Image (cartoon, rainbow, N blue to C red; front, side, top):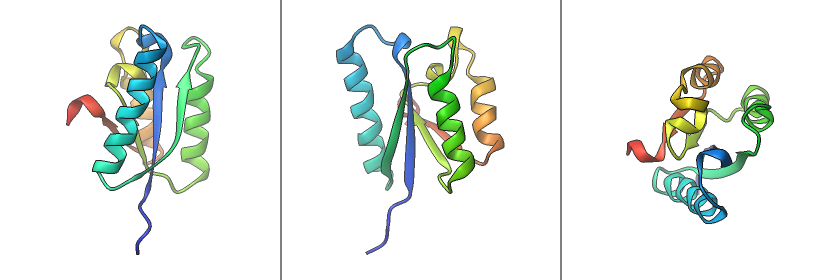
Amino acid sequence: MTTRPTLLGYVRADALRCAEELAAATNSLAAFASAEGFTLGTVYTERDAAESAAFHALLDEVKRTDVRAVVVPTLQHLGANGAPVGMQKDLEFHQAHVWAVDAR
């Protein structure tokens, strides 16, 4: 039996309206991981987009491990005001491929 590669998740709570949407977003990441042949690892949930603590923790894990895949519910979760380019480029600079569930 082969080991499935790990996929990390990232969700911004402020991009969602309620706890139920947060749970649904997390479930969609797990479903995506399974369908694409990954094991879902840590899902980093950003509670304060201004601080970006969860994103920095995600980036640190990408830097220190061999995990090279990250999934988000939508690309807007990678940036406030619909500008995900910088965060996505940070991940890609460290050889992490970024997928969005809604882009399938």
